[in-house]
Length: 603
Ligand code: PEP
Ligand code: MG
Image (cartoon, helix red, strand yellow):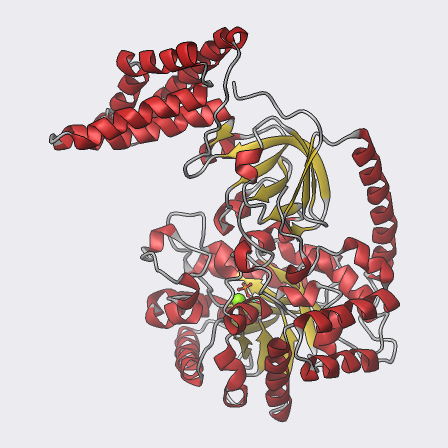
């Protein structure tokens, strides 16, 4: 139905977001206004183009009727009748005659002809005084988008959920909630126009082990559903119609990776200890309770960050205390006596829950997010605190607050925890009386008052994903400022050092659970700055362990000293890369790149 797939190899470069290589047919998810290409047809192409238009109209008619039937049975006949207007537009002879004329007489391709005729129609409607007629313009736009998607081979989110054939998903953007629902057996990998390495969609892709490339700028306009593509999530590349030479090279790469992965498997059961004897507790980040087993299989010593938001999204209501308790207990049970740090709710930013009625914000990352939301919604927070406390009766549970920006917030949250403990005692429900409560250091203000926070908390975990975006004022999800989002920026090293010094002065430990902790180029910098523990995505744990076992803490300290006295992020990055190239060159091959290095140029 859509224009024929591209011929010849084409390479598009974006930002590597999740390692792995896959090959398959492209499935383009349509969202927003599509780019409508204009083509001049030869006389002999016109009959086929008319046929293509008719097929797209018939397919759209079928889709609208299907939706209408579903609405009729689930909501009501009156609501379903709204779609009558859509069906009428698809049969409007004046409109369709104009589209045919543009194809036949002016030799325009079907999508351009359709788009031109509809725009004229909508412009005329918007000028009429009758409000009812003016409102029909919205119906026209809705149904037009469907026809164009069918002509261009773009699909809807509903179609995505019904997919059964394996494919490479191409979309403008993927929300954290859509990514969380992806079926690994169907979606081999994904590529998006926007996004960056620390957007929650990218983090979720790594957790699901789905190769991904983001920040490809215009990839949804460049590709059509059905294209044959190879996606390389290590290097941030998507190749359409890969040549035999490209396939041969990727075959070799796959063999080298398999050899390396075998070596990494050997370190899984071994301790994370540097060559000069420093033991580094290495834990894993999980998104769902079922991931706890993957964390252990990857050689993690526990869970350093359990992001609980995924229990709250993709559903119609809030999870009850019992439901949350069961989920947390499932992770605790899988871990036995090993620690699990359960983070309280971090909604907002790029993670939303439709049923909570969170009004759209101009700056969601600076807005009503995480602990700010929880402290103002004690009804929601209390349920989670009680569930976490109850889960603590069954293992080594720790609790952690996200997005702390002042000591006052910790005091308020701690007071609520004490209240919940008192309630549970009164109800005779067991919990760990000595449960450790820590906080994330992910705002510059938290790092700057870390000494005050250390008096109120039992441990720190540095969330570098947010700390970097807030310190440099570079949105972690925006590919246009991805070049500014530099983990090796000296400001970040200084903020981490401040945090570590304050924590150690108060005898509390500091972990890093942001994506920096999973990158072998950056881990030596963290260790050199005095970070005690690391927590990374399970898929990245073996490479981090391999790296720790390949360096001396003294080498890491030299790098950190350089970073603290440097005034150049790229100089620090170059030094960090040299160190990795010297101590564990094999790891350079399976890196998914640091954000400031990624090539964000599109084809
Ligand atoms: C971070 O900000 O580094 C972090 C671990 O939290 P999240 O990525 O969930 O915001
Ligand atoms: Mg964070």
